[in-house]
Amino acid sequence: MPDWTYHPLRRITARLLGRQRSERAALRLLATLTSRRAGARAVAAVFAHPATPPGLAGRLGATVPVRHARDAVRALPVQGAGVIEIGPVSMADVPAVRAAAADRRCPVWARTTDPDVAAALEPDVDRVVTSEAGIVRLTDPAVEAAQRALAGRDTVVLATPGVLVAAGPGWFQRVIEACTPVRPAPGLRDAGRDPRRWPAWLWGLLVGVGMIGAGTGAALITLGPVLLWYDNDYLGMRREQLAALNERLVPFLQHDRITMAGTMIAIGILYTGLAWGGLRQGRPWARTAYLLSGAVGFPSILYFLGTGGFVEPLHAAVTIVLAPMFVLAVARRPERPRWSPVPDGPEPERRRALTGQLLMIVTGIGLLIGGVVVSVVGLTDVFVTTDLGFLRTPAGPLLEANPRLLPFVAHDRAGFGGALISAALAVTTLSMWGWRRGSRWVWWTLAGSAAAGFLPAVAVHMVIGYTDVMHLAPVYVGITLSVVALTLSRRYLCAGPVV
Image 1 (spheres, rainbow, N blue to C red):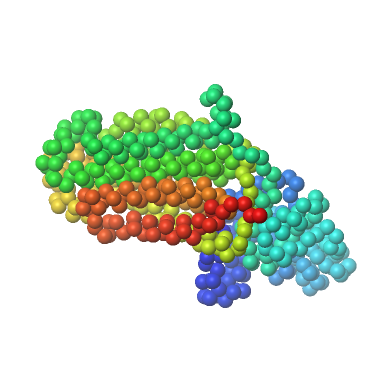
Image 2 (cartoon, helix red, strand yellow; image 1 turned 60 degrees about the vertical axis):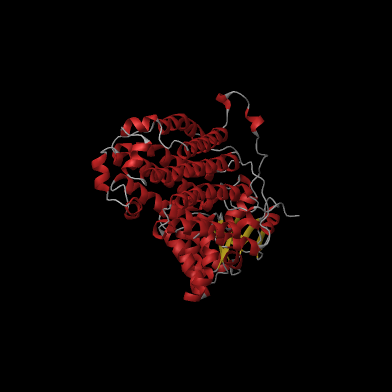
């Protein structure tokens, strides 16, 4: 389990199961998941571990008692441990150590002062530790303590169980990232004027800016004429005729399109942040987040195949222009690390931020579920019960009045669902992988995207009088969770350098 579940839920599980039992359960769960290669790959993907620098390989690990050895040997290498020491080992412990070492994915050492035990285990482990020379066993969970200990080139640093319990499963990842050599991040001037030489992060930045511009344009059109010439041609009706058919129909179309425009701007803000703060700084997880979101968002234009065949020209034009840029943004892996590491600072501040991180991830997952539901509705029934309540009419009379009206609304509805899924994936992955002290770009990206996505949706519903509580409940919950999450994590994410 990641730190954003371990720390916020630790007290709850300790009260339910007892402290020691809950800690053993956490280790056993992770060991079970990582006992097979597929599970180990899945856990590594969720944790988004940074690569271990060459100078750190085999020098950072943990020391564990014999009773937890088997689970630790299976679980901790996936977290980033490069060596596991088991000890102290007595003659009665030899079979348990042999069983634990048989499943190893990293070097396993056995610590003992008994020569007979050393002779018995020498064929089964990678090293028998009989001397403390060159080994530092940490009791301080602070990342800075590990950094200082690792400054010696030949020193092996082992975290004690107390360190892992206090710091959480992400301790290895934070130490590895803090010890990774970095270079200054490039600026716009470093990219040059030749597009053929532009780095991936610049193409990603252009996609984000383009999405913001497209969303702003869509909002202006919706606040003005609502329908453009191609909309009128497809429907065979103008705005005045739609209003005569149902006086609430035009406001209903506005509410759908303003919500879609806000989501497009939110996606643009997320992509801009991921490009500038993630891809430009050489964060591999930023490319994965960008790729997952865009791989869903851009193909969502194909929803027209299931909504009656209406293709909005401007939507198609934006996709045609931005899709190649998106491919260039994610085609290459990020360059070398170019971030500026910031110490973790006060532990209570980090713990509050982890609670905020959990709430932000829950918000992203909720948005993902909402996007799937909206997509399914757009591709099937089109209207939900509250929509028809607002329109004060069944769907049948509208379809009889204009058979193309339902496919037209379905296009807007399904398109919004696809955009919402795309935004949700970006919010969820950015929240899972981007939580680091001093990463103020993460805070501003999430805050800006939340404002762009939620506020226009609430405002347009209030303006047109579509205020059904059940219909707006997910929006209110999302706003509440986002505000609480960003408030709890602001000091941590927006922190400056620690003196």
